[in-house]
Image (tube, rainbow, N blue to C red; front, side):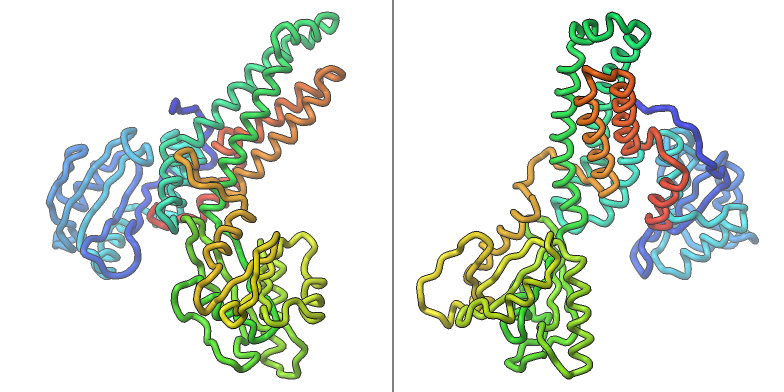
Length: 452
């Protein structure tokens, strides 16, 4: 991708250092340093000035020249490094004590401890990555499935950014046509019609909608869907959670009110994280502990993307279930699961939002999983899915809204038409960081690991 020149936003140029491997013991641990002109730094820490992009086996030295550890050092001089600055990577033994000794020695030599995400932030500010690519670094590390990892890698290599850049370039070209006509009001409409400006707007809007659909798939891979299991006591909520998870997570007994607090588990359905919450049975109770659990159930319901109402197939939906349904948020999607079909021998068929299952034997569970994906809007994974965040989706929706407003204004108020195009471009450009405020960058990079 062709880099864009950006303004550096209050970026420190201090030398920074951090442990880049996960906490705990391991065979190898890495300390990463980034800054300007690390030759003298290297001489004091290693006793050598490393050759660029060459693996040196050497000692890591304290202030008296004694060995703190030995291992491999890699040197990447600016601008050909991850951050765009001089970068040293010290690969030593992976014990927390020895890694902290090396890190403290770096701090003695004038480095400061890196802030969360600061290495990637410097890569962004030095035009090594755009903002969507920078965010995908964290998404790749946090990927919870192979599909999510592949999608994050597509974003990291620039596929998402290229799609956004294509839309932005189309908007820039369209804006140039529109704004060139504003000084010639007697000819503006005829000129735009001859240049097929309004047809271009329609094409851009269609492309934005395609990108939105793909981004929604990537957002599902990243964030998943939150599903809450609700119903009266002893209808099989905990058994269903155990069946979905493939292990005994929740205690199952014949005693009503066994589940007193929410039990949470994340499962994978076609690579999509599904966060399942088993809740306390909903009923009137004098038990103080159970009552608190029921209050937490309603709190979980208010944050869910989907509710699964479990009922005993032998009595179906009663007045108690109707009361539960009446209290649910109106916009919350709901499936009714008729459980315990292994005890019921009458003919049954799934209809609409009602599914017949047996949490004990597994009958109907695959149908339920596919229904969950369908309600979430998931489509079978394709090679074009890239990782996306809620921030990206909001920007795409904003751009689409501005384009819709522009389409309504195109023949009546070209000044406002041009302004809507500008706002759509601004919204899309915020995805890659071409226009981003300091506070947005701080929020994004603060969520990274220290060594990234």
